[in-house]
Image (cartoon, rainbow, N blue to C red):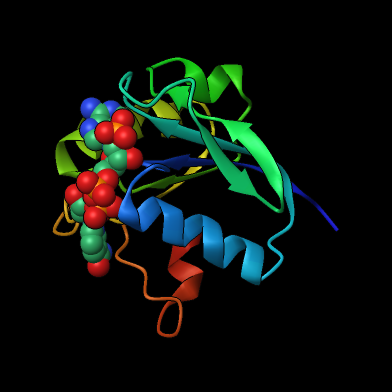
Amino acid sequence: MRKYNVAVVGATGAVGEEMLRVMQEFDFPVAKVVPMASARSAGGHVTYNGEEIVVKELTETIFEEEEIDIALFSAGGSVSAHFAPFAAEAGAVVIDNTSHFRMDPEVPLVVPEVNPEDIAR
Ligand SMILES: NC(=O)c1ccc[n+]([C@@H]2O[C@H](COP(=O)([O-])OP(=O)(O)OC[C@H]3O[C@@H](n4cnc5c(N)ncnc54)[C@H](OP(=O)(O)O)[C@@H]3O)[C@@H](O)[C@H]2O)c1
């Protein structure tokens, strides 16, 4: 089975922690998890599958440097607005949990139980 490099943007926050917890619960096929946050939390740690992983600072180039396949964003709308395009440009599928792109006709609003196929757009 293919495994993915997954970025969790806002990994030190309440929602980011929950995203990490759910990924572990469902045994999501990760090659590596890259937790990201602001410079304030960079260098700290989060735990994933019993392993301490260093939190990296969110930058415009980190998605390319880390060869991210999937980027989960939950660090606020303005963070998504600025950084999600860099993740997409680097080839990642961006799943944004903020409301920033909600009314953007170019960005599908995906509810997994309703229209999972739209993520391909
Ligand atoms: N769809 C939904 O149902 C739903 C529900 C709740 C929240 N949300 C979205 O999720 C976001 C986060 O909510 P939360 O409750 O997890 O907030 P939170 O606990 O305050 O966590 C915010 C996270 O974002 C990071 N962050 C903030 N500014 C940043 C920046 N400039 N660059 C990089 N990382 C930054 C923080 O990192 P530091 O540790 O470095 O500060 C932290 O990891 C909300 O703003 C909202 O957009 C969506």
